[in-house]
Image (cartoon, rainbow, N blue to C red):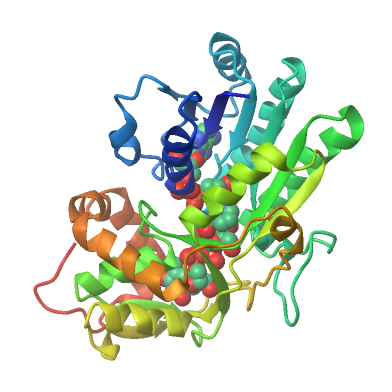
Length: 347
Ligand code: NAD
Ligand code: DAU
């Protein structure tokens, strides 16, 4: 199984996974298939662009004809599907593209895996499908309770994937990971948004009381886990991937400010996200039984991530002055109007 199709490979986790595979497996060929939405960026893969074992194809996972052609042309043996619309707030503003890509796109890929009798299909999923976890932790057997159009679309995709195992014994596996952070994460998500705003001395818009809890997983640890599931996961199974590093958003925010030596007064409590899940928590016994453990501690990994955003300002400044600016105004415009913007600091 050395010829991989990595869909959504120009995004945050996908691009880190491409680097991981090319480095770890010297005989593997990787084809990245990505629509290059606002979140997909060829710069994310610039360092592998000249690698003869890497090919990029621009395409939509909903385009069955092109998916089939690429699989045949490159003699693909396995598909790892990262392609999705991924931002909860955008799914609240505009759910349609989430249903189209996350559900219908997954169906198109499954049909191709079935038609060409591929050896493995990995669906990269999320802990958000379980919904909020008031106490304890969710295991893979727990019922789904998605709260947003994003998580509902991802839940639909997971169920579709698993149905292809039950009906056709397709060799599928599903991962469900907690919140990732690290290099190349689009600065609409909490950690990169707050790091880049803090570097710019701009307000950090914390939703509600700031006490929602997420379990933070360094992206490199997730890449190791997905690799393990790709090679050793059991067909038809789901694997939770969490780091056991639960923090409130306020704790994360304070740590970012401290690392960057910025004042606490940059924190701005804003209107809560509708349907905002209070806490996510995963029981990761299954993936740990395969031998996986997260290698990085949250505080160390966050410091490395802050450093990466400090060292790669060209990457995110370009984003912040483009499409993202319009989105940001739409998302935060009302709540931020007339508040303490630091004079002279603009995107
Ligand atoms: P991202 O938004 O950074 O990247 C998504 C990628 O998918 C982009 O490159 C985009 O261009 C591509 N894409 C979107 N629609 C497409 C389409 N129709 N056809 C082809 N490509 C398309 O996302 P990410 O954070 O890297 O997440 C990757 C996967 O991991 C997603 O499936 C997401 O649901 C899942 N996930 C993410 C996290 C997280 O914390 N980031 C946690 C758990 C699960
Ligand atoms: O849990 C896995 C999921 O993590 C992935 O499936 C999603 O693709 C990914 O976007 C992420 O979803 P979240 O909604 O948890 O991530 P986000 O970074 O948007 O928000 C993290 C927390 O921070 C959440 O409680 C909302 C809060 N938040 C977020 C933003 C963008 C704020 O308080 N202010 C903000 O401006």
